[in-house]
Length: 191
Image (cartoon, rainbow, N blue to C red; front, side):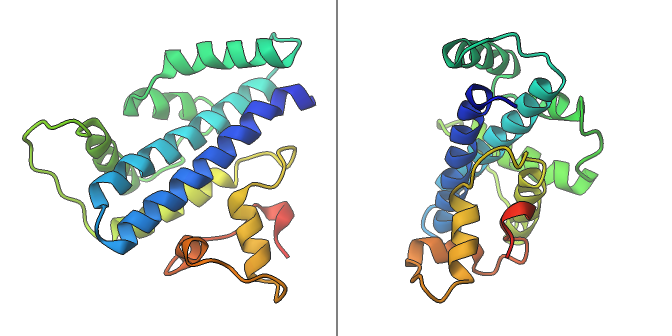
């Protein structure tokens, strides 16, 4: 990948990590589960699109020759996928078929339904507390597909810092790995 190709992907990975952290804080604090589920879907969707666009670049489908044209082409690709659960999974499965089990797809579908219900729709929805573990596993499985060409992002830095005695982590960043057995930096940043 050329540098101008991965600049937007790096930005999206950082944005996905921030949304994921915010979602976990809201979930674990217990006072924002609905908002946390909306942010969790946005984080997973952002990560799916990052993986899909990375794959398209590696398959030489990107025709752009500069950063501005890359953003325009990504915008076009993103609008074709939109926010739809089915569209995102279909785009991901183009290169990564059967990435999720049927149970994981049900959890993702449930999170997507919460995202869709971000405006009042008078339907009752619920989600099991143990679903957070499934979502954590899905999120980090997707992160593991991200190329090492993309620079270190927020979660990579948290993992490196939590293993170092030189850094003191804030309570906010501790929510990233508290009760999260799936938390880890991408392989090339693990110490």
